[in-house]
Image 1 (cartoon, rainbow over the protein chains, first blue to last red):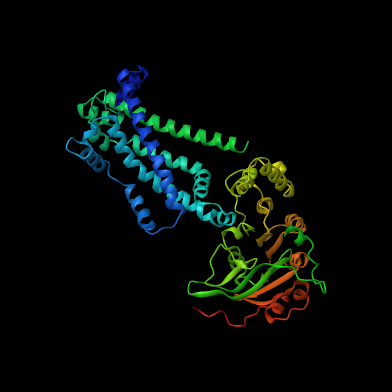
Image 2: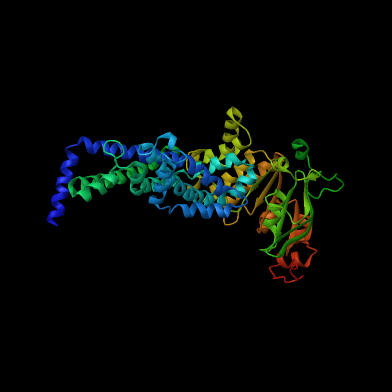
Amino acid sequence: MDGFFGILGEAVALILAWDADLIEIIGLSLRVTLTAVGIACLIGLPLGALVGTFRFPGRTAVTVLLNALMGLPPVVVGLIVYLMLSASGPLGVLGLLYTPTAMIVAQTILVTPIVAALTRQVVEDLNREYAEQFASLGVGPLDRVAALLWDARYSLLTVALAGFGRAVAEVGAVFIVGGNINHVTRVMTTTIALETSKGNLQLALALGVVLLGLAVAVNALAMTLRVSAQRAAYA
Amino acid sequence: MRDAACHVAPSGAVGAAPAPVLAAARGLAFEAGGRRLVDGIDLEIREGRRTVIMGANGAGKSLLLRLLHGLIRPSAGTVLWQGRPLDRAARRAQAMVFQRPVMLRRSVRANLRFALAVRGLSGPERAERERAALASARLEELARRPARVLSGGEQQRLAVARALACEPELLLLDEPTASLDPASTMAIEEQLAEAHARGVTLVLVTHDLGQARRIGDDLVFLHAGRVAEQGDAARVLEAPRSEAARAWLSGRIYLGPPPLRPV
């Protein structure tokens, strides 16, 4: 345990020293993750709301597919994106492999089904409660989806947080499509894996502490926003 | 149409021309789970009248209300609105209040605003209707409160006010005062009386005999998915002709005629 606490102390010292490399890695991690979660929400929220609100042929199959895709193995997604973006792949001409954009693409693919599937469940439950009232008022399809998303907004914040949790902790896909290139595509999770294999446990643990701290901070921020928004909404 | 409804002859007036038929059911039936839950319903809702629907639990009262409002499609028969089949436009001339009020996860005022926005209202007219609805429901002081934290009585008053803010010609109410205390019941009945005075036609499902006496002009009594009796409310309540209504009003359990056949 002395060894662990010794390494932990050195890790904390590294964080407090505000090491430039560390800041760069944290910054890139946040940029990739938040962008991927943002895009996933733009796609997943309306998609989930549409599936949760309306009945159409194949709806059950779509629901099963969305739920199944929540468990997409990151390395498989990484491999598929790699094959698509590699020089001989259909999108190789874009030259995106081993760039942060490729990492954003991979994480978006991983997070979108989570956002869509959880949104579908939240919206479907709410729609069950509202359906007759909406039908009685004559609410149109688009107004219905918009109203359900708005009224479920606090639950959907938790959905977005679930997506963030998946993305920020992900290592397999971003490793494959990003390549873990120093100063280019190196993020916290890939650095932790690399530094641990090299025996540089201080930096690995420092990043681990930061990663945990970020997860807590983002959740705390989201909860603060939620409480403030609820107060403001009824002030 | 509103003006005409305001001058409807009092219930039971002899020799007065009957008010025009606003809504009607013709041979209405509904099946679910292999059973016919309502069957052969024929009735007329006359403009400006207050029609009370009564009957035992499971008689099909709520189902009939939903069929009249077009929330569910009948398996057979038709619902007519001013002589024509009920369509989307006609449904916008109706409003419905449910037994358990459905409150959006918004403030009291935002609940009203949403309903009015759906009807295409904005600006000063919407603001004026919001103000009037809050006043009629006596909820001005609670306008900014989340609607879902209101008491049951306050929520139902808001639900009635929200429905009436849309200025429907016909208001359908499914046991709006079930499980409310007498004061809350009275407040709802006052809202309904105001609406009726403005010419709104009312159809009310209730188990409350006192309420039926206070409100009802006409009464439809359902038994096992069929109309057992209908007519002037005072007459049905005082001298029911059907065995089903007689038994129900005297607190007896009535088992016949046999339930509707499976389909």
